Length: 183
Length: 124
Image 1 (tube, helix red, strand yellow):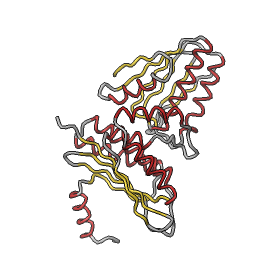
Image 2: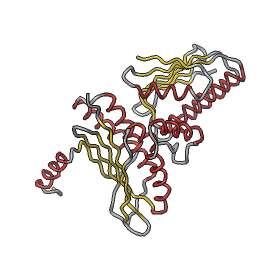
Image 3: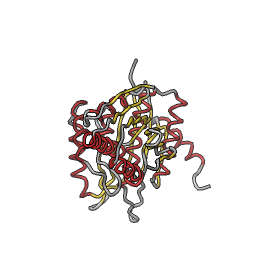
Image 4: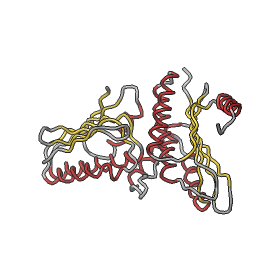
């Protein structure tokens, strides 16, 4: 066995203490996306999560997973895979991802997310409307609407950071939080 | 005109475009890997329908669609809008949404603001 049992136990404990429901690391494609969605949905169902929160979480998961599928790149020199995590605690459901990004793409992405984070609910609705009217489906099959949709569904600011790996590449970490309604 | 009918899958909707029996519907989930490829036959069928159209009642009963599908749906509605106004046929959209899903109701309203086609929202 490659991993000592005690490490698995401690990994499981840290998953629990960090409220993680699911962790996936490795190759991302449409088949993986479907599997991860199905597993997480089952998990949420068995926990009796509110259906509105579940739908919003599903929505965000799809956009996050398909963003990775469409925009990830793999650098054989850098031993760092893309990662996807879903967590849940008493207040929030949170969806986190990490993937490699070229440093030259950081400025535009930062500007895009900062613009989204500057908008309120109505502002996001209007931004989505305008972007959708003017967008075209790109070569990789995206409409450029994913982050706006994540912000609309999460109703919280998108949290993100870039950890520089070298002069060319960074690791892009994204977190969307859905606040469970307290009633 | 030959109907275009496909069954739904985990990540693609069931589609019926049948001008013989007057049944037009999209239902299920839409998050295909490549929306352009998946919706190409639909767009082609609708373009052909637009050459010699008739009155249409289109039922859209989607449980979930991703943002790329949302763009394609807008393209479909705009195409139907153009057909309706240019050829003088009545095209109506029935927007079906889960009664617990306010976001889906709102998504329908946001589409309806962008086209002049009549929209009727119905919960299920």
